Image (cartoon, rainbow, N blue to C red; front, side, top):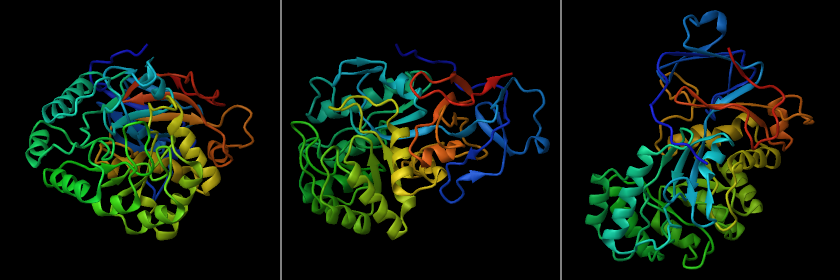
Length: 396
């Protein structure tokens, strides 16, 4: 069962050494020429070769033992409710389980599965504010859950978005999961939210569950949101021509999710590469959902896009880290000075045909996770969910 972690970031110096491959999270420079990271008070302070860095007087030192390291993974699209419980599947501990899959930050696309979810103006706002406040105080295994994403309803007015922004709500839930489902109405709500500094996303494709709506290419383009949620369907995808048109004509980020159509994911990836907009591609799971919880959903998606979509391992990791952080306006996602010390140690799974973690990913094997660090604090050692890593880090 999930444990609420208190106490804030690690205090003092953290040194991580003997890293074989250092994935940066930066699509433009996905692998760094470095083997050591120094963090102070939960933030990265230096990156480089051990001989060139001050690694003395560490409060905690971790020997990577030749395993690789990446920024903590980010799930751009999930559906929390309250606590570490999903009412859709009546399952406890799903967030903690995803931390074992390398995810350190979760972004809500709406608390839609809450039983009896209110749809009146006051109820929508109250739920969003309560969810935002609750997950600010509750961090299962140290995970950062950015919740409080109100699903737009037709009865809402501009003043509701102003009130939500003033209360600290930073993003809406998926347009289309409520009563807003036409182009003109979606555009109006996007403009209201954007005016008050709230990020906007929209459901794309066929209905996900009873009560949701088809959101077509034309509706998405007219709404012009910041994020085209699950362009590969959640679960049912739009036709190929519509996916390509959204990549070419839409302002929004191209979000690919685990709980979607795999063929459509490759269509979207190929279109993004052809258009030179790979920097706009981000990854999510769209879980919990009718298909359940996928603790390795982000790992599986980046491995799928690498092995079937022709991305280098570092590029695929960047989609789930630096790309997502930049587009969703989050701290983290990069191995760079000043960034939060959120790390995933990973290596080729035992007996993989790939000789390195990068080769394993590019061949389609899920890497093994040996340790997850959030805010400089070691949250887990060897993952209980991934295949066993060939090499695992050790606390010195």
